[in-house]
Length: 447
Image (cartoon, rainbow, N blue to C red; front, side, top):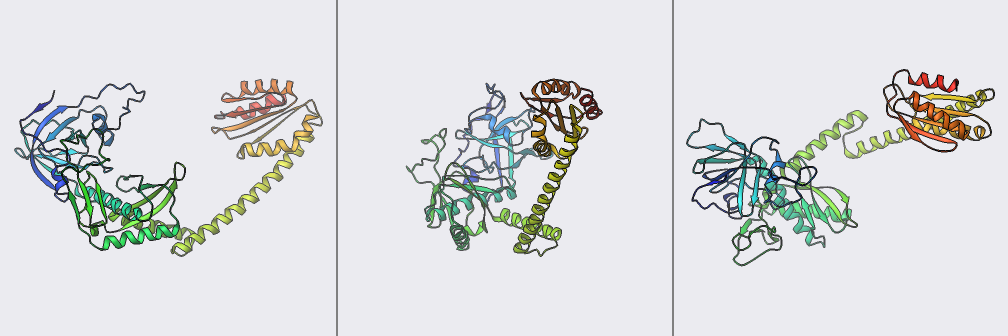
């Protein structure tokens, strides 16, 4: 049951956080409070198909404990921003002003339900209760640097015939990306990054405008265009775009934009990853520290070129080592082939087990003995793997003998599963049990 007061709350589009994105606290009061009741879902995993912000379950994706009670609280106004415009929800706390002895209520989910700004609260609040909102401003600042940075980055790329098709803001500590219709060249990437940071240094004012009668095609379907407020973010004279998010007040506050790697998606489309502001500096610092650690391991200089040369040297050594190992395995496989052929001169069955080299080695041995075995009334069992680990089994020989031996293999090896017909049966052992390898060897020799 929803309990309300007669106060008309501020709507999303005209919240205090949208009017003053640098405001960190606000004294306001509770307008309504209702316990959240998860809707029954027809989805097998219990999740709703809808992506609209009016879906009350969306707030549960951002940290609320499943099974605990949640209340949907609406205040007269809000300094906490509800998720929207590609920007993540603010975090903050609510403090009850009439009883400051009470512990502050943590808020980690803010969602827009139509025009309403909803706090997902772990505690109920009676309508009319005066409260103080306090935003986690370190998080807000980081999100604004990424969001305003994306606006500026997209504006620069628009002038280079690289329109932004979409974007995704990473959570704090993660990279963001913009999706483009094509992959920029290395020269274009250098130009984009240089131009972005030049624009940042110009200290352009960033303002919010709400012109009467001006609409936007980017508004969510569930946002009331007649009663709502359409906001446009203006960056100097270079960019003017509709956006509901909180933004910095000056381009210099972005600090820096760093471009990262690219990823091809959907045909010719490309995702260009980037970070801005303090997040970019932190990520760059971590990368430099990581580079130094790698340099120590490589006994090389810490300059990127030195580390790259060291990594290439190690890669070449590994490649050369792999070639030597493969050559040795081929020689061992030839030796095993000679042993099996010699054994089959007076026997109708042969067995080979190799602990660590797997199916590739089995196939090398099979190549060595295949023609010899085909000419005789014999069957060979080749297997690999250690106790308490997985492995492979190949049975090769005369079809009738292979069929009988495959049955014996499955009787002896409890987790063996496979199939085949004619001269070859191949199976996988999920886990060799103690004694099974020796038991299989004995079963083959007594067949």
